[in-house]
Length: 309
Image (cartoon, rainbow, N blue to C red):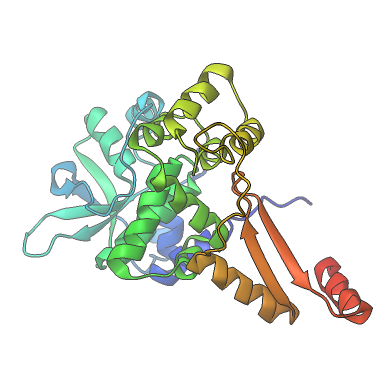
C-alpha cells in the first residue's frame, strides 16, 4: 500500500511550538468531503477552534509573505463552503478583543472578500520568534511562498532573533545549504528580486546570477531568451573570468572563504576524519571539494561511508 509523502520535518517544527492537535487544525489540509462529527461525540482538542468577528483580526507583523495574489479561486471556495481550516491568531497585548494573525492571513483576506462576518480561529499566546517561524512553516508547507519572501523570513530569524542557519534549517525542515543559498538571493538587485516574486525567474535561475557584473541585464536576457538555470551557469562562467579589457584573467581566484564555507569544511572533516578543502567555483552553486587521502585504506573508508545505505 502506497503512502503519501510526509513534509520534510515541517510538522516536527510546528508540533514543537503548538502541539499535535493545533498542527492538524491550522495547517493540515482538511478533506473536502469529510463527514463532520457532532461536537458532543468527540473529544475536544487541547485548544479547540473558536469563532471570532472578522473585524477583531489584524494582519500579522511577522508575516513572511509580502504579496497576496491569485485569490479568486480561494474566495469562490470560501463563499461556497466557508473556511475549512481555522486561522491561528495571538492576542494583541494591551488591546481587548484584538488578535494578530500568525498563520492564515491569505484565508482571512479571502474571507473578507467573501463578506464573511465571523471566522474560526485557534488562539495561542506566543512571542515574535515563534510567530515568524510558524508563518514561514505554514507558507512553506503550502508551497506558494516566493523564494525572496522565504529568504527575508530567514534573514529576520537570523538578524532579530540571532538564530544560526542550522537552527533555522532544523525548524523549517530544510537543509542548511538550502537556507544559505536562499538567503544569498537577497544580494541580487531589487529589480531582480521582483522578477523572482513575479515568477519570471526561478530561484535556480536567480542563484546563477549572483556575483555577475550586471545581474539585471542577464536576468532580462534569461527571460527574453528563455534560458534555463544551466544555461545561465554556463553564461556566468563566460562572464565572470573576464577582466576590464575583455581578456580572461590569469590571476588565481581569491582564497578568502566565508564563515559558512569554513563551517562546512569542518563538518566534512569531522564526519570523514580527513583534511577537506571546499572552494566555490563561481558558476552558480558549483563547488570543488578536495579531500587529502593518505593511502588506499583511507580511500576505502571514504568510499564505504559515501556509499553506505
